[in-house]
Length: 412
Image (tube, rainbow, N blue to C red):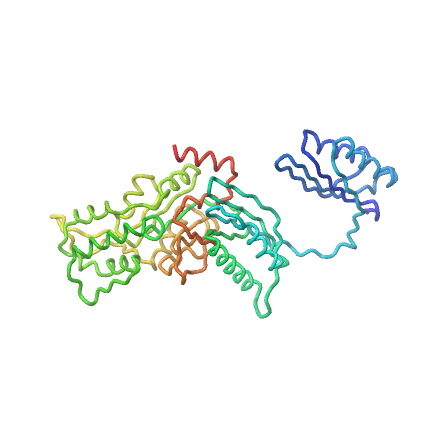
């Protein structure tokens, strides 16, 4: 049985040097102490350690034990703080609810202050923070604990977390920053598959617009049943649903139109780096097969699903699509198919789409990212407000040294 008054806590801070942990633990052993809890860190040359030690089996007086432990400070140049550890007097500490928050964007003064103030208002503890700056680029990763977060009356805990996440996304939007919020247990689980909704994330919006203009110019008069909306992805859906209006157009014309399509900056580099890290890559589009052809051939992705127009023996479009036809609703089924082939669960999937109902398949995966969403986007873990899709690498928990290595090799 542990003897009351002979369990103490020791905290030590100072400049790091070789052998500090050995010096402290050896002194504890010499005084017949038993370490029952320890937390140690070293960062940028600064050393910190916290221990709880049971001296119930020691024949030394507490005065002698305290003197011996304090002498470590003189020997190792550390500031030592000792106190009696009484478990009965320690108030109940709720189980932590750890989350990882990643903020990405252009560097400017005040970002850390604004976000820290936001968490303070919610009584959310910042457990750890690290920042990476590359010229004007800003990346910050915070480990936060929401276990003691202020919950508004009338809201369940899940609703309160959702409300906090939404407000954080709005704050980051005003700061021109992208943000991703993940629970720590999901964050730490190894991801294996990354799925991109092609026309909403990898293809430049402007080039997609030019492609559709070419199509409309070739089709000419479109009947009233074929209604194009302003949103490009809706136009693609309309083309798929009304492929008959394309009847009679040489398929070679479509291949030429496909050359108009340009990828977002860094898209191919991102896929190549992710492949080099061992991720499986899947492309999903309810558009046509030449949407994925350029990416598939250039980056060597593992899966690519798209629609294919039927053509006759003369290479003329028949107005029909080859089966199976991919729509927004069938993307979830395709994702499940790939998961079954790879023998993985949803927690191991990262999905990127524009956050519209057309990319609703991304909702329940391990990490969901809405890329440049509109105001009516679905609920996702993160929001990317810029077209720099390469920033996704900073949300995967990759150590800085390894990330630097992959970025360097990816750009060479």
